Image (cartoon, rainbow, N blue to C red; front, top):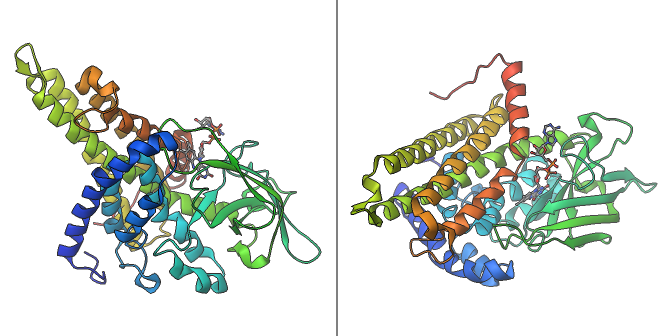
Length: 398
Ligand SMILES: Cc1cc2nc3c(=O)[nH]c(=O)nc-3n(C[C@H](O)[C@H](O)[C@H](O)COP(=O)(O)OP(=O)(O)OC[C@H]3O[C@@H](n4cnc5c(N)ncnc54)[C@H](O)[C@@H]3O)c2cc1C
């Protein structure tokens, strides 16, 4: 336990159990209706607040518990056992939601807002993806300074999470229109009630229902320079650093889901009798279980290794590469484990209302992780860049 943490070891272990019960109990019950409505009820936000899920990850100066990254990720693993849309909301809450303003916001804005995350008085989504270009330097939303020195935002964003419960949006936009380099981009903290800020509805998703996905359109949205994050031209760096930490939270989400899927599969394999024996006794099923356990364990060690690095130095040289490795491997893990789960459950696993748990929903929810915080190829590009630049060596906290 972090020696400075505001809770004791015993309280922390009890908290992990509390969050697991919440995720698999009241949250799961609520999700039945959310699968149809695609909207979280107020009761969800209230329960999350009452269970300190907007606070546990914050530094104590902002009302939090001073947990280290390893501890934060352990809590994340527990709530990721529950519904995917809620996991998405809570994982974002624990990371990019507050971290970007804390890392790059102007002191006046931080003084005004940093203590308002702990009870969700404010919540901030993140918008980089566009319909009109690729994610990265190929961004077409612009923020051009007018005669009054204000930035004027124009363009669109697409596939954006949490648009229905956010007060601000971190927007990546081009400020240097003549450059094709990464330095053409800047990051902004945009109030969602600014004139010209429009939210455009999107269809329901395959899984992770309720997480408020929509498109955004900016029509001449005027921003005082105080809303610029970091320096002009630093947008790509801010996005990459923020996404790299968040990628590990995605990996940890996959870990929580994989662990739950494995446990459900073990129960089913023990109960299901075919040809006079539980399928758990068959070598072919044991092989499946061994694969699922191996990937899940390997993923946990990767995530914990990252957390130790991050706690030692959040801007360390291996952070981006290791974060991308965690995210990429977590997709392999979820693929193996969710396929294994479906194989073990047989036909019953393909139907809703499975008595063992939400097998069918977990399978759908897990697929969002392929895309969140960058598709697998983006992770591969990041990993290969780091690997080639540094001769294949990574550092470890022994
Ligand atoms: C559930 C969900 C939530 C999301 N939430 C957010 C959010 O809150 N904020 C946000 O900004 N975005 C969000 N996204 C968008 C997400 O980050 C993107 O879907 C993802 O980065 C992939 O981009 P794309 O959809 O534009 O795919 P594309 O860019 O069209 O890519 C399609 C395929 O081509 C590959 N590809 C593309 N370009 C290259 C290249 N140069 N080299 C090699 N391969 C390439 C990709 O890897 C991918 O496999 C969300 C997406 C989902 C599904």
